[in-house]
Every structure is written in C-alpha cells, then in structure tokens.
Amino acid sequence: MSETKLDSMDAIVWEGKPFQMALKKQPIPHIMDPNDIVIRITTAAICGTDLHTYRGRFGSKNSPWIMGHEGIGTIVEVGDGVKSLNVGDRVTVPGVISCGYCDNCVRGYESYCLTFNPPTIVDCPGMGDDFGPNLGGTQAHYIRVPFADSACLRLPPTTEHDLDYVLITDIFATAWHALDCSGFQHGDTVTVFGAGPVGLLCAYSAFLRGATRVYSVDHVSSRLEKAASLGAIPVNFTEADPVETILKREPRGVRRCCDCVGFECVNAKLEPEENTVLNNCIKLTEPTGGIGLIGLYLPGQDPTPGVPLGSDKQGLFPVLIGLLWIKGLSIQGGVVELRRLQPLLQKLIESGKAKPSVIIDEVLYGLAEVPHAYERFASHKIVKPVIQFPV
Figure (spheres, rainbow, N blue to C red):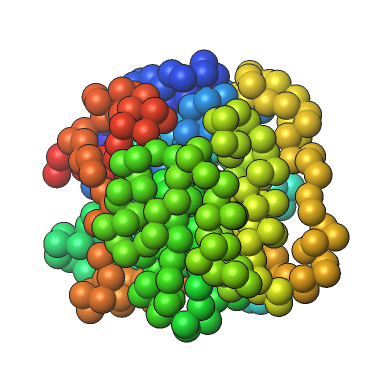
C-alpha cells in the first residue's frame, strides 16, 4: 500500500512521566506474520484504563509505548494467511488479541488466549510489551493486528454508527460484561458504582436488559447528571453513605451490584481506599445476589520506568468475606470477552435499539489535542473523549 510506505506516523506515547502524554513520531507498523493485518485508524478513543497509565499506576515495566486500545479503521495491508478479510474492509481493532483456536478460545475465554504470547495472561494493544510484544496502540494512524481473522469484527462500509462502533471495542462490551458477571436477570434492581464511561454504559445496559431500578454512585456532579438523564437514580457518596441511602429505598438491598471503578477508588473524603467499593457492594447486595467486578484490580507492582508510581501493596486489602459468605453472594470479574459480545452489541446498534455514543461529549479531530484531553478527562471535565482521524 502506498500510504504505508511512509517511514513514520504521529502517535500518542507514554514515556513514563506521570500526568504527561507525548505526541511523537513512531515507525509505521507492517505485516510481521501471515495472519496479520495493518489497519489505518479512523476513529479511536481514550479509555479510563489509559488514565491509570497517565497517573503512573498501570502498564508495562518499561516505557515508551503507543497508547490506546479502542479503535476502528480500514485495512490497508493483509498477510498471506488471512482468509476472511481484505484490503479496504472496515473492522474493529481488537482490545484483546485472540487466536480463536487454543483451549481457552475454544472454551469461550478468548480474552485469555494462550497462543499469541504464552507468558502473558492477556494481550492488549496500548499497554506496552508486558501485555503482548509489538502490538502498538490505537492512538496512532496505523496499527498491526495479529490473528486478524479471529480478533477483528467486520463493520459495514457506511460510517453513520462509527461513534457507537468504537465503543464496542471495549467499554460498551465491558459494561455489558459487568452485568453478566453479576448474574443479572430481567427485572433486577442494580447499583452501579462509578459513573465514568463504563459505569454510565453499565447503567444504560441495565435498562436495555430490563432492570426495574438502577442506582448510580459517584461524586462528580456532571457524571451523576448524565446518569440521571439515562434514567438512573444518582447517589453522591460524599454527601451521604451510599449503602445507607440506597437501603432506605431497597430494604433488602439490590439484587446486583457492579464495581465499575477499580483499584483507584476513593472514600467519602476523596482519599484513596482500594477496598471501599468492593466492600460497599458486599454490604448492599441482597442475600443470594451477585457482584460484577470489572473495575481494574491488579497485583502489586514495584515502581518501574513504565509504572513509576506502582506499589507492592496494590491489590492487597481486607474484604468483608464473612458477610459475602453468609449472604450467599456470587462474585465474578476479569477482562471482558470482547469477541463473544461484539456481534450482539453491533446488532443492537444497527437495529436502533442501542446508541452507546450518548455518553460521548467530546470529539477530537486528529492527535494534536489528545495530550490536553488526557488532563481534562482525568480531572472529570469531560466524560468520554473520542478521536476522529482525517480520511
């Protein structure tokens, strides 16, 4: 392809400096394996997971790396082994790499593929080589995708739903997965902790799936207003204890709780307290109910050049296990199974039943403003920033 014969491209790069992202020239990727494709990115996004890196708390041991794992685009190069995709096809960029044929993939756990890089638990673009070597990121003009036949979802040629499609590459699917992990059933009551992009789409998905009442717990006024506009009952945890507040309305508790916050959660004084959301879920979920744990929780990690503010105490905290046991609660979490959920979510979008882009409040055109958008996203000035690239 003539357009990929250029030597370099612009990309957003993490260089290991907390609260800074850099716009840098990077080599354009090319086919490395017969099962690869190269995609020219047309729409990408900044994810809450990216903010963990921006704050110096998450990623690979060594920097730099290209950021971003949410994106869609057009195929510009195809390896000789690719059977179902062609140059010019529009596809999703996989947020997690999967071969489609290993034991885990066959069992339906494609996000825990055993083939691409066996030493890693999951292989994701935009997180550095410890999450799969040479995967690049979507906050760039081009990206290489291994195992493209299995990992990519083909999109229609029209672009009318692109702001929706980019969200099925992670957060819409992750929000849906949170409900699955909680054991959600039609008619359930739900509390969603966190009204960031995933939390908002979790509340939105709960209504799509037939929830009777949904509570949204956060402390950012603009996010709670957005949650209310989706039909959720907003609860500001800095103004009143969220468990007590909701129990006044739901004396037995809610049937399902979803943790859409993760390890960087804070208490009512806005101080870091890693166990506060999980323990609130245990207190609030009614006996025999379920908890979906899809906020990011990680093993402890000493500070490194790629994770300069890492901590060996991360992921180690007291949990109300006795209360969880006596109430007979179920709890499930982990990385979303993207390829299982994406066809369903695509159909909901194309049928007009779902419009996840309702949460997007800023579209950036090109990469120049992305470093500043990270700062505004991290400080809650915007809910969900998306990047569109010139064609």
